[in-house]
Length: 196
DNA sequence: CCCTGATTCGC
DNA sequence: GCGAATCAGG
Image (cartoon, rainbow, N blue to C red; front, top):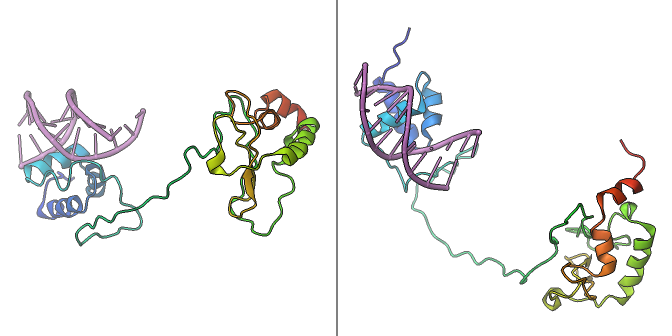
């Protein structure tokens, strides 16, 4: 049944879809009975090869922008982020408890327990509270390679700072924070008894 | 490995 | 003219 051929109608569909930026495989699927190679081959024979630029328009989804006008290049000034914003630490060699999962927004809300304490050893927890007092409370700009970059508080408020104590060489945090950030997998497992 | 289009060449 | 196979690239 069906000698699948390039009828006027099918060619029209091809032209339309191709000009709309659809990929050869998409068109082939739509037409049915042909492979993307067939579509590409036909496209070339029809002379409507390159539509724009070259090959990348992988986009296209539910919402089709329908670009009918010219493209307007507007200068976008990206926000200049800190030199080495450490909020998302370095390489948790093992697992590492994420630092005080810096809350996105929680204005006016105090943040007593920084990390989800449930996973931290009592010792570390104690030091944590104590070190908070000694913390130098540095801001982003004051951080250096040798300062502890453990974030404290809500970044959205002015009640936000970094520990700033002497960091362990090679690590982004001071000893106390390294202890909570880089916990061996085993240690964490031990501490969590229940669950699922 | 998934995908894209481009080319080749026997049919 | 057609399109599978192949190539070149992301």
